[in-house]
Image (tube, rainbow, N blue to C red; front, side, top):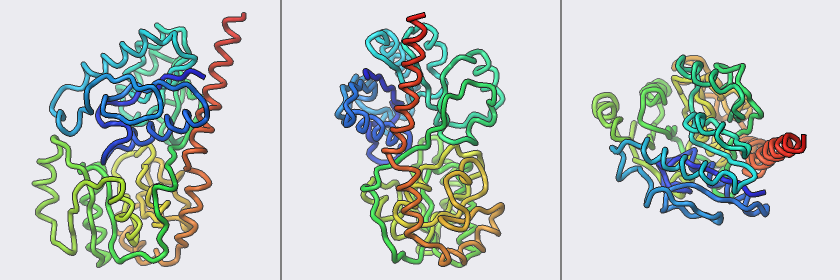
Length: 348
């Protein structure tokens, strides 16, 4: 098939450091190319891909251009994409709801993977205006606020298993990896580690608008080696950081649509202690690959149960449910279905 994939412009494909959506887009694109599809990737010019790269910006917007308004650049991307939509059998976007006004202008089937939160009230009015949009959720929980939208599939995010090294003998620290933002629960992670009497290492990107939160709420609570901020990690460093962790803390304060870091940790054999929210119950097998909890106190107590879990089972869970191959199998089914519907429509 001739497939167009549109990625956010915040990070390159693949991202150098932070960038869960961009990493998923990269894995999807490269696997589609390996399977013989003719793929055009709309992304930043510093991206690396086996697909045909359609560069919208010279480089990714983050971190050097973080203060710029991203809207003009993404509008340029959408304009470029849909001006040539007739060149493709299918258009697949990862730009959240931004493509909605464009999809009715193209005869080519379009599918939108939603990577972000959908539980805000204003989204209900927007999506109600486009009930025919073909939407893919990355968890079943993600679609709950919009039950009447046209959900064509749930396709879980996948990772390249070979990028993560299985380690059966962890160190003694708890790990937190994510954005430096209250909804990610970094303050709760610090309190969990304190109550559990275990050291905590925090790996996080600090965006421009998150620096004040870090200075006021997190920095005063750092106390190496008990609570240590280790910065933003690249892929190699993340592999080591997650693999040696005793457990990953995932104390989210919002309905996380997926939580790629949980899968990355489990690929290393590292169990996850997560708040029972968002997609966590779909990703974690409670009592086998992690522990689901309802409070900070419960998560602190759960740290004492990690030794009951089999790290090899964590790795197997990822191989069975969250591999790139499984993810792309799911997307290929969506592509074939939508392309078949379009052929039938034109024939009729």
